[in-house]
Length: 116
Image 1 (tube, one colour):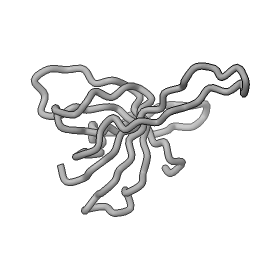
Image 2 (spheres, helix red, strand yellow):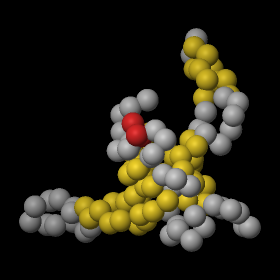
Image 3 (cartoon, helix red, strand yellow):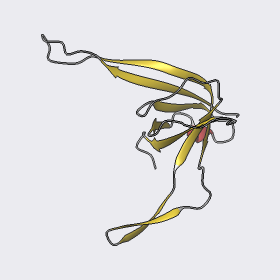
């Protein structure tokens, strides 16, 4: 893995009666190596109304020694020697990892920075 990423998790606190707001704390879950990939080479067609859309998915792969991520965690690419435009891209974890005897942890993610 040549790229690096940072994974953060937002935690909402208890209601502050005086302000009526819930404070949000953002903590770093992981910083280190990561690789963003399309796990499937072939895109799947999906029909939405009268449109035929090609759907594919993305996953972030991190070393097996990395802490576990949760759905909702945000992954930010912090370095990418081969594709510098990826630096700063954000993705949201949508599914936890499950498996044994794997070479890396693979989390399904969706784009979270407004770019396509």
